[in-house]
Each structure stands twice: as structure tokens, then as C-alpha cells.
Image 1 (cartoon, rainbow, N blue to C red):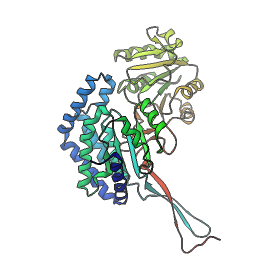
Image 2: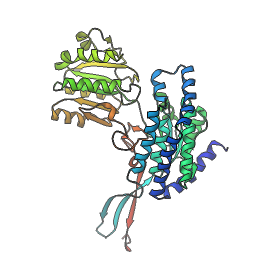
Image 3: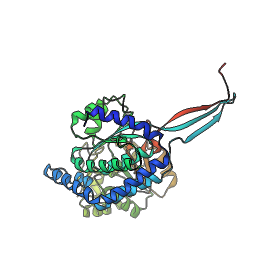
Image 4: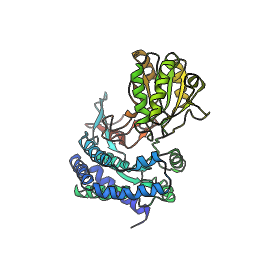
Length: 415
């Protein structure tokens, strides 16, 4: 095996081959990937079992172990996700804008691959497949650097991806697995700006900060998910209860789980006792402001930093607010531009909330858990960007392309 730089140089060379491959060839590679994932389910479970035992021995939090686990359902979802990405419209070469200048020049924009994408991620081995599938579909080579807690699972998945590329006649190096979880190796990768076009970090605040501070490569940030549900005065309270429950309880350790519930003062007395009862039965703990605790004293008092915190656990912050303006102001102060939801029967209220809240997904009468590439029809996602350059929200195949200008003429010269 060569040096880390040698691996990335090979990926850079493979990127040109992949970008010039036709859509059918890339689709064959993704279909082969789905088949191999299913055929290799036991191999993946065996590798994952090593990671799970190591994680438990290291005292990893239960929510993090949940994200690490490759159940039969998760393995099947990876295969289905690869097939869904394969079935998407190929973005490479798509002409997205056409105009004709007064001199007859036909001016167009064409989608092209970004080139080489470095994806840095923690815990969830299914990201290995999602990232590879999306990059292959969009003609990008990818360097995969997972966390040490999922090292064996990621290595097994990367081998399957390489086999699938090779079966389609594409270079294995188009999806390169970094064979060490060492942080020094990551620091080196972040200096390869002449080889890597963009880096996408997925993980906790510490990882995001590490990458952002050290990278010489442009970074598409996936910051923490401080997600809110606002229960408006015109809400259907039964619906609101189910949305809050799903947003918080279904998978509390993921970035689109609800971390704060805001309740309009006019419905707080009717809503909060039922909310407390239902979520308490699911072992949720509460961090509530004084107005909420006045109605449900059993809720614990919120600390000064509980609003704006990503708990990633069965804990939720709760506040009573005066009106829509106060809810929007609270989100502007404490949110992370990730995901927010309003529950209301009033369409004008909902539309104002959607217009003024500056998060990557703003839902009306729906769970925060829908901010996900799979759920939004992207097949999968390589991350949820919480910055607006060059993508915002879940990033699918279109978001993994850039646009170049293409000009057609018939002899025009500039005067």
C-alpha cells in the first residue's frame, strides 16, 4: 500500500474516468452495489459485531451505539438506497439554462461533477454507501474517511463498493477508503487542496470544528441539528402531540430529531400535560422554562444553555412563548439553521413561519424527521448542509454538481 497521498492521487486519476463514463455504466455499478450488499449481509453483520463490542467496551453512549448498529433492516435500506440513487435522473451534462444573446451566441449552463469529494463521518456506517452511491451517480470520485468506532463495518462496505465499481468496468479507486482512523491522517488529508475539490464533514461539533479550522479545501458544513417544533394557538393538539412524539422519540440520536418544543401561551395549559404524559412514558426527560413548569411542575428546570443544545438523547427543552413573533425570534437566537416545524390550522401563519425561519427545511404539520434525502425523494443524502454555499439542506446528486458555462456560436467575434 502506498502513502495516503498516493491513494488520493489515484482517486484524482479515477475521477476523470468516472466523470467521462456514461450514465448506464454508472448505473450498472450502483445496481451491482445493491446486489452485493444483500449477498454480503452476514459478512457485514460480522464486521459490525466487532465494532459494536469495541463501542460497548469503550463506553459509547447508547444513542451512538444505535447509530452504529447494522440491523437487517438497515442493511436492506442501504441496498434499496443504492437502487433508488441508480434510478435517479443522471445530472451530469444536464443543460439547466439556455439563452440567446443579440449577436446570436447561444449561452447555456451545464452540470458537471465537482471532482473529488472527501467525506468525513462518524458512527453511522450506512453513510459509506450513501456517500459512495451519490458520488458515483453524479460522476464524482470519493474519499471515505469514517470514524474509528465503525472502522471494521466501513472497511467491509468499502470492499463491496470497490468490487461493484470493478464489475461495471470502473476504477476501484473512484471510491477510496482511508485505511486508518488516525486523526493525524485526517489533518494531512485536509491539506490536499490540489487533489480534493470539496470536503463534507458529518459528525459532532468537535469534528466539524476540527475540519473547518484545519482544511485548505472548501468545506460544506453539516453543523449540529438544534431542531424546533412550534405549537401554534391554532394547532390541532392531537396532531401536535403525535408530531412532537415522532420528532423526539422515533430516533433521538439523529440530527433531525426535535430538541426544543415551543408552545403558544394560549394552548399551553391544554397541551403541556398531555405532552408530558405521553413523552414521559417513552422515558423522555424535560428541561423546561418557568412558564412551562408553572403548568407541569414535574418537568425539570432548564439550565441557561439547554436552549440551543443538541441533546441527541431522550431529552427535550420546552418553552412557552407569547406568539408567532416570539417563536420565530427564539429559533433565530437558538437554532442552527437545520430543521423546524410549525403545527397550526392557520395557513397564513404557517406560510409566514416558513418564509421567515431561515432553516434548511421548514415543515408545516409534519415531523422534523422528514429532513432527510431518502424521505425527500433524493434516494439518499451525502449530508445536510446548514450553510447556503453552495447547497442548503439535504444534498443529493444535483447538489454534488457544479455548473459551467457553455457557449455555442457560428463565428462570432467580440468587437
